[in-house]
Image (cartoon, rainbow, N blue to C red; front, top):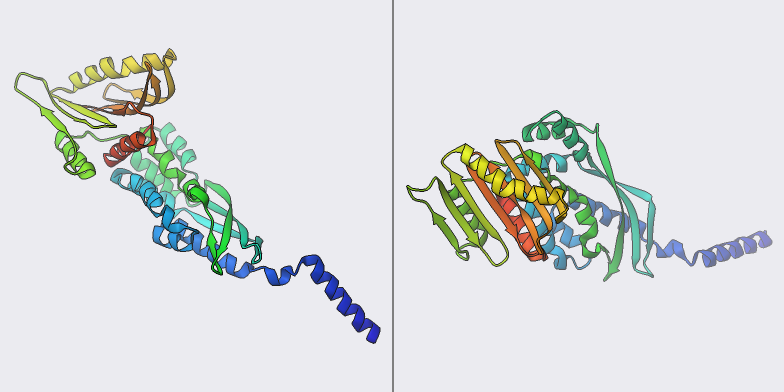
Length: 331
């Protein structure tokens, strides 16, 4: 009996030494609880809750809010974004959890699932559908077409508390990449903008800090308004006749840049279409030695141009903010 007892003690001692006392070092239950809280906050796009469970969360608060507001300010696309968000779910792989209080590191594998918005876009657009058809298809999909986003969530311990370590919020941005992708769906269309709407949008975005010009007289066959900023140019024409708007857009904007795109005199990415009753060219690239980012748009009696000659992030952000504010596609 004594030999058996000694043997058991020795076996236990060897087991503990082999595991490095891992039985006492792991903190899996606490880690899983934090990851679950984090994933729920991601699904709800609740920045306040995300900041609370993230390592150095305060440093990323402005970046997350800015990214979300850049798209949620686009009221026309709000139902699209909501339909995709409503389809989102997550599953934590509990068997994947690894944690060490000694090393103050942990990780867990998570799979997010959401509606396959790109496949549905292809189907609806092939059927000549419009924005409302796209929204209906997203809402009615009921899990028939889904995509998965697999992530390894990393954590660090700070003052005896586990916090999500999402460097440069890469995991967060990967989940909400659909905002940026959907904003490029030019087939969703855009509505004619009035000069008054242009001015009110500029005022809302920039307050009194913008230079604005408006021109109209009885001798002209159009009204003209423009905004010239440090990083972005916006100008629009409202023609008396739709045929004049179509002709001006096709000749002065569409044919000019599209010909250069097709002849490889434009270097970069572009998307374009012209039906005779509406059209657009959105672009991001080099044209005659300058960096162009933005678009030309035509619908109804209106021709609108919004672009930047600069390729830096601030200029691109300013163009995107304006186009999203009026519900137009971005490059």
